[in-house]
Image 1 (cartoon, rainbow, N blue to C red):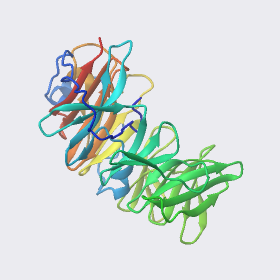
Image 2: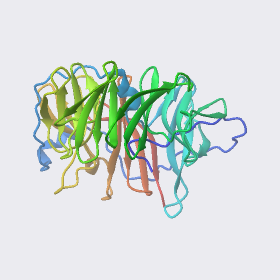
Image 3: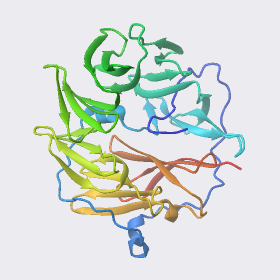
Image 4: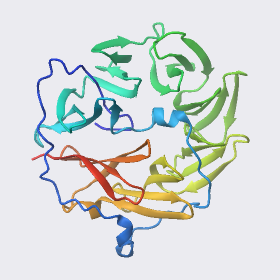
Length: 354
């Protein structure tokens, strides 16, 4: 259930008397040493990359729209855990306070949150349109009577798409639903997009790319690109062939940074990424790219004793921390903080269904 957008919800703890027992620690032995210490034994291919690049600090929209495993507020942190055995496991939301006490808050299927901002969650409530949640109350954020989807968050606005047979309308509104505005209409079926200032970079069906400037109302076709992460003068994005590129935002010229990437995250002067391979299983690996190096820092084969399929499903970088989530279907779930060398700093949650 945990995809690029995690299922997250928040409800008042008043009346929620169920306390979740400590996470099931009957898991495989967990090793905490860095993977780099045993690189000599590793025969996995090194994925070609350009390492002598200045990466810089990502734009604020990266942290608003980036994959999140944990959400934080002044009372503690929220994360999803399994409940039940391997034949009946389902996700529930836990709240963990400063004393590491966990309380069951709500089933995961009720509210699919995309963002937690200023102690308010934003997402879909029971499959309906965009809702906010605060102080035990859900509020639907509507744009007239249009059917909206594919939300993108900036500091000021929530952007969304409204598709019809003629193309795609791009809309935006404030976080309280005020000041609704149509900012663009593009005669294509847009599948992904990202917003940087007045420009909207998008990918449409049949591998068509473009950038729309809301200040000048100009739509420019691009040979490559799509939705990406903005960092300095560049937009970093994934190609259809699973390669990581960056596009110069001044002339829209792209260069390949790394081949065979499933997803990536920014941390300091590095890019952390999970490699993609057709021939070998790399879903449990994390590489560190930057400062002249491209090295593996984590491999689940070296962390867990049992020979299961483990998938690093999320890398969350926030406030100088790196959090990872590892899953193995409904049978195993693991959340931890690691350092830049792949060492496990803290095991936050670990559960094996039996």
